[in-house]
Length: 167
Figure (cartoon, rainbow, N blue to C red):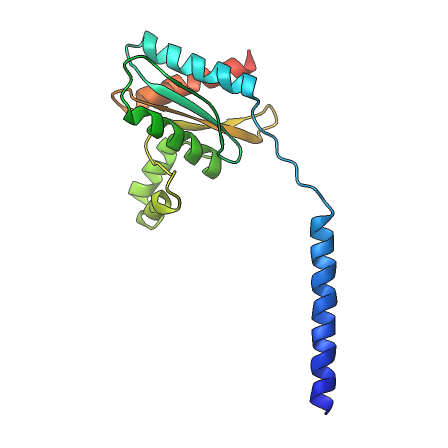
C-alpha cells in the first residue's frame, strides 16, 4: 500500500511539473526576424541581372529564416533544373546558417558531415547559396543562385545581390 502512495505522489508531481512547463512555454510568443518580400524581390532581381551581365542564364531564390520561399526569378533561357537548385541552395543556407560552398567543402573534408545533404529533401550542398543577415548579424533568410557553369559564379551573383540590402 505504501508503494501506491508514492506512485500517486510521483504521478501528481510529474503532472504538475508538466503543466507548469507547458504553461510557461505556451505563454511566451516566439518572434523571428525575416527578410521582407520587397527586399527579397530586389535581391533576386539583382542576382539574375548580375549573372546575365556575366553571360549566365540563372534562377535566383530567396527564402525567409525558416526556409519558406519569398521570391524567385528565372532568367529567359535558364534551364528548368535551375529553379529547384536555386531554391534548395537558399533553403540550405538559411536553415544551416552557412554558405553552401562551405558546407560542400565540409562534407568532402569531414566525411562524418556528408550526411547533411540527406537531412532534408531540400538540402543541396553545392556552391551558390548564402545566408542573408540583418545589420545585427541575425540570419533573416537565404539566397540561392543556380545555373552558371560553376558554383563560384553562382555565389558571386548571390554575394553581389546581398549587397543591395546595405544600399
